[in-house]
Length: 122
Image (cartoon, rainbow, N blue to C red; front, top):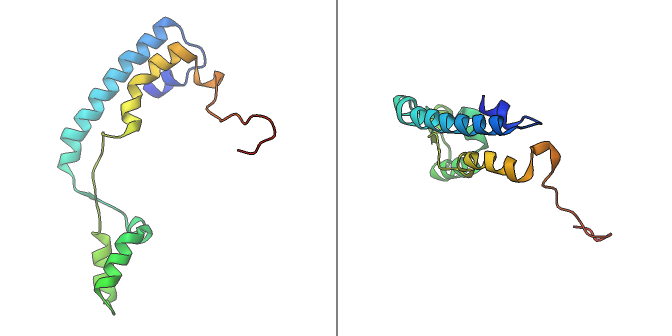
């Protein structure tokens, strides 16, 4: 519901208030998800994500000159534990969307592209 309200192309005061209420509900749901659901599961990166993790692979490579392939794969598969993180800018900024809509209008009425003056290359 939050995403649908945030992407509306025409807002009224009642839709912005509904967005604010939806933001509150979304925040409460995310906090409950983090405290209840996330603590019940241990999550780890996929093997493909571990393979892409250069620093992890390099650290493991420095430990063995000739690692056994089975031990290498096992160690990579438990390389990094994943945790859900609410302390990001993206989740922090959710609360500012309704105010931004009131100030600037809907997101289809402006863009954040840098304007380059004259013929100077940016």
